Image (cartoon, rainbow, N blue to C red):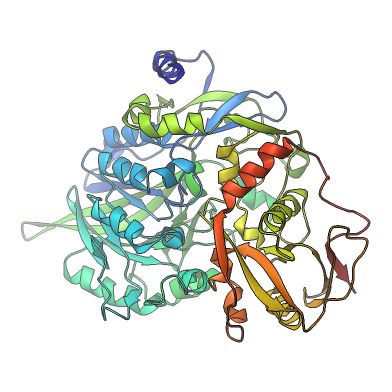
Length: 594
C-alpha cells in the first residue's frame, strides 16, 4: 500500500510548479527555431555508466539535511522528452556502456530494466562496457537479444569462433539517417577488459583502436556519412587546476574556441585521437572514467560524462549547399551542452547536486538547494517510468529495511587501511575460518554513508556477485604473491597479516602474521601451508592476480556464499559500526617505511 500512496503523492506534486526556481540553461542554446537559412542542426544525447542505478539515488544536504534525488531514469526521461519535443526527427541518442554493476535493480532485472528504458525512448546505439563482462556470456547475450537498437563493438575478436561479429545485434559501425543527414557511428570498448576478465572470457581478444577507426571511417564515408562519431567505452582525464575544474563542472554551451583543460593520455586515447588524419572522425563520445569532459583534440569534439549523474548534448551544425539539384550537407561546427545535472534539485551556486560528504573537501560555494528549469521546462520526475517498473521499485523498497546503524562516514581507501575495509576483511576471515583474508580495495565501490544500514547500501558497496573463496599457499608463496600485488595505485587490505611497503615507490617489503591480537605478531613460516580467503574474481586470475598465476597453480580452492550475503548477516548481528573500531592506530595492519 505504501508504494501506491508514494506514487499518488509524486504524481500530484508533478503538477505543482515550485514558487522558486532557477534556469540552469541561461545561455543561447541551439534550437531548431534558431537555425539560419541554409543551416541544418541535429542534436546527439551522450549518456553512459549507469552502473545498475535505474532509480534515483537519495541524498541529503550535509548542512541542512534537506533531501533530494540524483540520477535515475525517471529524471533523465524528463530531459529526453524535452529534447525530443524540440528536435523531433533531428535527434539521436548514444550510450557509452556500463549499465551493469552498482544498483541492485540493475542486477535483479539482469540489466533488462535499462534495455526496456532504452527501447522505450528509442536509443540509437550503445557499446559494451567492461562491467557488462562481470557476469556470464548469457547475461550479455540476453541484453543484446532484447534490444531494439544496435550494439556497436568493433575491437573484440572471438578466437574460438574465428570472427569479430559473434554477438546478437552486434555491429562494428553503422550509418543512421537523422533528419536530412547521415551520421556514421563506430563502436569500440576498453582494452582493459582483457586485464580485468581474461580468465572469465579466455576466447576473447581485445584490439587497440586506431586501425579499426581508420578502416570503419573510410567505409562510412563511402556510404555517404555527413559526419562520423566514435562511440567508445573509454574516456579522457582533462583538468589540472581548480579553476578549470570548476568551469568544466558547470553547465554551459561549450565551443571549440573555449580554453581547453590539458588531458592525460589514458589508455593511449589522446595519442590515438591526435594521430588520426583530420576528418577521420568528427566527434568522440565516451565514458568509463566517470569524468565530465567537453574538449576538442585534433579538431575532434570529445564528450564524456560522470556516470548516471550527468549527460551531455552535442549539436552538429551543417551548411546546406545546393549543387546540380542536389543538397550537400557540410559539417561546419559542433557545440557541446554540458555537463547537464540529473537532479530533482540543484545547489544554485554550484549548479550540481553531487553528494557532499565533507565540506572541508570542497573549495567553492554550494548555495542552497532549489528546483530548476532546463530549456525553460521544469525538471521533475517522469512518474510513468516508475509505474512501468513497479515490480523492481517494490523490491528496492523492500531492500531498505533497517538492520543496523552507522553514525560516521565509512570511507574506502586505496593506500591506507580504513575502518570499513578492515571490518569487511575481518568478516570474510571469520566466516571462512581462514588463516588470513585479503581484498582489493576496488572490490568496494563506494563509501558507506552515515545513517541506517540495509541490504541495499551493503549491496552497493560491492555489487559484483562475488563469491567468498579460500585457497592454499605456503608462507614463501604468500611473500612472493604480495610482491606481485604491490603497485603505485593501491595496496591489498588484509586480516591476520601486517604488511610493510616503501613510502617512495610502494614496493612490498615484508609481512608478519597474527591470530586475533595484532600486538602479538610473528614471522610467517615459509614452508607451512596457509589458507587465504578472498573473492572469486581475484582467485580466478583477474587484475593483479594475473601476475601471480604465471607461477602459482591454485590449490584446494573452495567457494561458498556471496560476499554481500555474508557481510549482511554479520552486520545484522553487529548492529552498529563504530568510527574507528576496526583500526588499531598504534599497530596498523598496513605500514609504510623509508
